[in-house]
Amino acid sequence: MLSSYGLHALEVIDNIFMKDHQNNVSIVISCQFVEKFEYESMREFWLKKIDKLPKMKRKLVKRHGSYWFQEMSTQEW
Image (cartoon, rainbow, N blue to C red; front, side, top):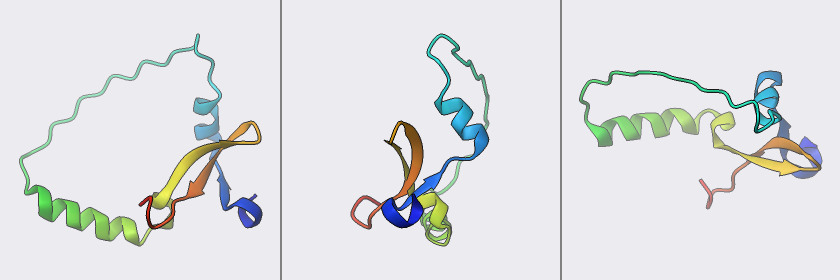
């Protein structure tokens, strides 16, 4: 699928969540405390980091009855 369509298979745990039935609702409660920070500098920092990781430039698509990660084009990114 990668060479033909540019699709990457999901990891096993991701696939389990994607195929979960709507009657099996998972409730996840979390709490996070974040200190104040300079938004623009932090944004630039993370964009530089993400640019080096191709996995971060993928979107979730459904093809052939399964979910896959597909690489985004430059315009989409």
